[in-house]
Amino acid sequence: RGEAGGEEGRQLHIVTSAHVVHPFAFPHYYQEQMEWLRFVGEGHVTTRLEARDPEGRVVMELPLRPLVHRHPQRDLAVLHAPDDGDLIEAVSEHGRTVLPLAPAAPEEGDALEFVGHCLMEGGGEGQEQ
Image 1: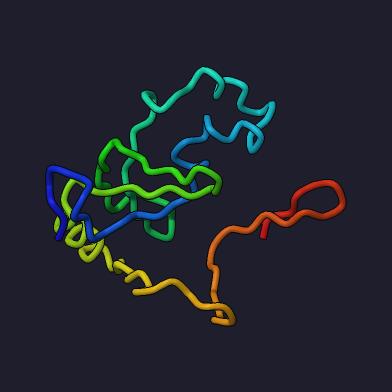
Image 2: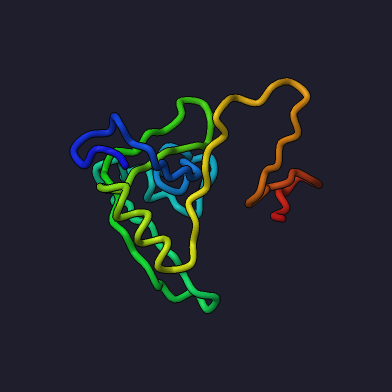
């Protein structure tokens, strides 16, 4: 369980795509369809963790700390709940689980599995899978 007041000592991390929580930092992802993003900055962003049912209705919502840790070169960000215990309780109540991080970095030759959204290049236009 992390410290309620500071970032150090955190044991639970919410890992997400940086373009989701900081879309203004990725204007090339959105181009003309969202020109208004050039007027948006970090001060305009609030974050929360949601769980949704199969019909898309929000069944759990937990406000997150305002500090977003964004990787300097990758589309990756880490966020935190105000209290790790509240996060565990909220996700557990709705049938979700907290996944452990690997205790050490993978070694060369280790098998890795990536799960999630993938944008494939092909024929001049991206294809989603």
